[in-house]
Image 1 (cartoon, rainbow, N blue to C red):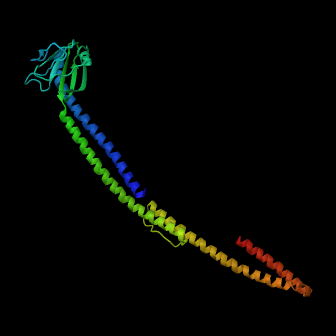
Image 2: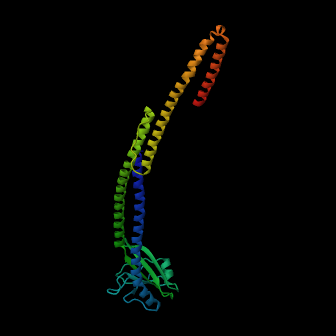
Image 3: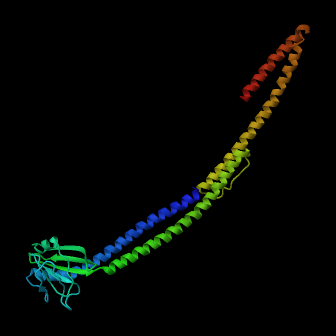
Length: 297
């Protein structure tokens, strides 16, 4: 996979993760805020009724249905939300025209509690979502149950989730495009650097250079690559000069050695003093040649 593609995918993945986290936090914050508002409205209705119930009073226009599955609610013009009274024995006092708020064993236990207790729960009534509260002010005199339809809140949260998802997709797409653009600009210089390295490897020509403008890491790499090629070129030139100089220096003693060897072929006919000079020349030239070889090494 090309580096440009990897960087674009990386940009997109990071932005998607960030957008998902921010969207989830926003969604949870909004859901918590809406639920807190619903709970506050439930308490505003149930708290005074629970206090009245603890003092021995009961909401007006609430009849005795004589069972745990009765329906209840406020009288017309008195209570805005569906309301019912749950007695410790499980009986429900409610308005017969109102909806029935579900009550389980925990709610009945709250109705018989001696100390103030409040319980919130999400329920489904007639296939619609409700938030209900069961509250008692204590004294084992029963509990008040109030419910509120939260369908509108769920619609708002569903709409919010869709908007956040759409924003996340758009932002991720823009981030991927930006990553592709930035990676393309960076990778172009790296591709040029790679082409130059491959050209040097294939041709051995060290005069190849790459653009190295700017001060980022890629530019520093290009500058270092050009400097390396310059040093390699200088090193190769030095080696060539060394070979040329060594060849030139070695030719002189080798020529003298060949001449003296030719003279030695006439060793038997050679005068003593001439023979001594030739041997001395051979010895000196051998030492000179040894010194030159040591220099080259």
